[in-house]
Image 1 (tube, rainbow, N blue to C red):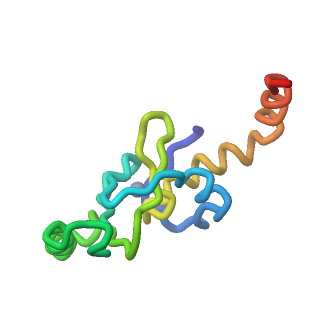
Image 2 (cartoon, rainbow, N blue to C red):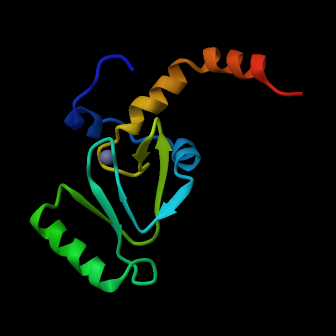
Length: 118
Ligand SMILES: [Zn+2]
């Protein structure tokens, strides 16, 4: 993955593309932890998450605003290398993965072509 950047640096970079976000965020959850940074994401829609839980998370967010992310709806998430990843997480660490795919596009295209079925 090359040189690991610090979170602050990544947060200043361009966010991942909508295409990558859609490709990665295939699952929907009411609560999800970003394994790339440890932030907890929670839905604030009472039709998605129990009101009591929503209020508990809101209280936690007040105490540690950097550790909790509130969503109006279901949270889109995916799994990469056994880690839960959330395309819209402020850590923006998925930027590293998208950059990796972009920089090695030809290599992956050759591989997909060579292993294509039928
Ligand atoms: Zn994160």
